Image (cartoon, rainbow, N blue to C red; front, side):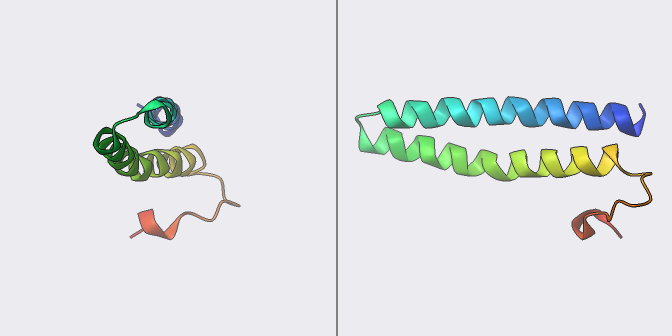
Length: 77
């Protein structure tokens, strides 16, 4: 698998996670039970770091060989 293929896979994963976040937020707004709404908010909070990481890795792998790209220091050794 090439880095560009990995980048596409990360973007697809990010899109799926984001779609789930949107879905959970809609469910939360429609929820009348406070405890159920809290659990939905917690699930969204757990998904947000995954969504951010997928986007960061997609950018990193997609632009890895681009000399003008300043890599995210979080993913460099």
